[in-house]
Image (cartoon, rainbow, N blue to C red; front, side, top):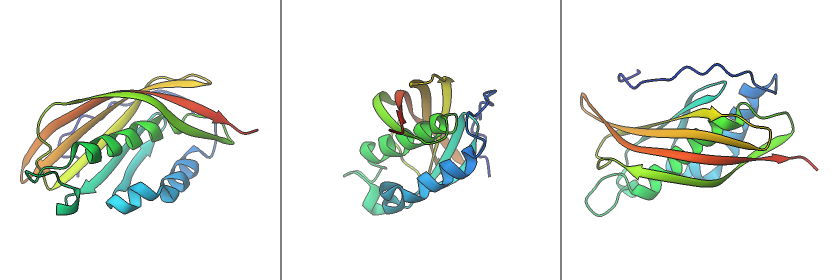
Length: 154
């Protein structure tokens, strides 16, 4: 279900013909996403969507998704968007991001999306967004800008 969340179609060519399997394999190895209970909902060249159902263990003192959890999921969504365009035999590493928390992350489901703004050989600039779904209400709760570094094999 899309929940009416905007999905920006990207028009980038992946450098790796096996980009989809590479992203999915990397996501499966990422311990924090498994620990949180997040799933890779979709990935496309230059884009990614991750979903996280609410659990009390993911909350802050008022009962909203914790800002650290929100940041972690958005970081991964934008990171995997960038990774989808990277060359074979590389890895991805976040080197900085700035996140704005726009509204309390009060919901039953968090949906984080990432998209590439500018792909580069070594540095990739991405954008990430998070929405929370509560009943039939969808709230844009965070937006992020991120710089990724391509880790080249030695």
